[in-house]
Structure formats: structure tokens, C-alpha cells
Length: 184
Ligand code: HQG
View 1 (cartoon, rainbow, N blue to C red):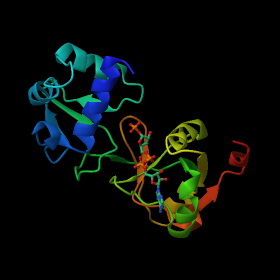
View 2: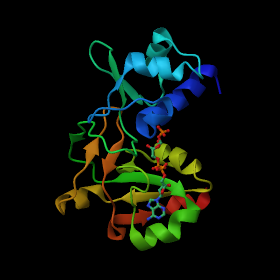
View 3: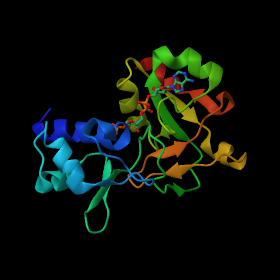
């Protein structure tokens, strides 16, 4: 992992989960003050404004956004602390995907997908992304989520500005294990 990636990981921890590790707070929309973030992070990780701009610009998942004058920064999704990042409510495609580890299968097939430590269940528009997410949890499996049907039934879907699909929960009846996954 490069120095910049290490710093980025630390920033993701601060902006999504634990702003208190550097003694800062986020506002209700998840924004942190950029000067405070740089001052706090640079105590342990190399960071100045130019580096922070590079992290935001080059992040492969578009995890962060600045406000217009770059005095504030926030993570676009993935939070465990209760902030309202003004997610766009949108009509989902018929099918979305969720990748996870096979060790979670029996629990998921009993109780459905839950947000666990985060505010939302994270879904992807394509199988490949879901597979990547699943691999972070061990032997990957992918579930197809009947998102179109869920929306008809009144469930809400949101898409973060970096394209991650989010919903509060997915009951078992809308889940189907991807048959192709037996080959993985
Ligand atoms: C599982 C990454 C047992 C769920 C990715 C998942 C994503 C259950 C784990 C984003 C369950 C939570 C989020 C149940 C769900 N019983 N296990 N009923 N319901 N689970 O990390 O979706 O790189 O909080 O399947 O790209 O893996 O960090 O969620 O395996 O968008 O930017 O509980 O994180 O983005 O794990 O990942 P996580 P996730 P970043």
C-alpha cells in the first residue's frame, strides 16, 4: 500500500466511523472541516492540502467529496455514525447485487441482509463489483437482490454520488444466491 493509500484509509476511518480519533466532529451532513482534518491526520500520517486534493481526485471508488470552496470534506457513503449525506432517492434497476463471505450465508438466508455496523446495506449495480466486495470477507458469494420488486413493495433505494446503491434492509424473499457463484 502506498503512503497516500494508507493516509486515505485513515481518512475513511475518520470520515465514516471515528472522527474522535483525531478529536474532530462531523456536522449533521457528515462534513468535516478540512483544516481540522489535515491538522489531525498529519500528526500521524503525511498530509497537506495538495495531497488531500489528490486523494479525493484519484480515489478509485470516489469515496470523498469537497464542498464548493474546499473548506469541508465528507465521505459519500459507508458511514456507521448517523449522518445525513443527502442521498438521492432513486428508482433502482430490476436487479442489484450484494457480495459477501460464504460464512455469512446461513445467517443472511435466515434474517435477510442487515446494515450491520453501517447505516445501510450496500449493493452494487454489477456482479463484478459485488464479487470484489465479497472477497474482502473470505470465500465470496453473491446474492441477486430483487430491487425492482422491493421498490414496488414500498422499500426505498438511494444512490450515493459515487454510485453505490443503498437500502435499509433486504428481507429474505427478495434474495437469490447467484448460481454461477458455485464455480468461484
Ligand atoms: C454481512 C466497501 C450475517 C454483509 C464496499 C457484509 C461496500 C450479514 C457484512 C462497502 C447479514 C457487513 C460496504 C446477516 C449482512 N447476517 N451477516 N443478516 N446481513 N451481513 O463491510 O457490504 O472499500 O459493513 O453481507 O465497496 O461488505 O470501504 O459491508 O458482508 O460498498 O469504500 O455483513 O464497503 O467500500 O460488512 O461493504 P460491511 P459491505 P469501501
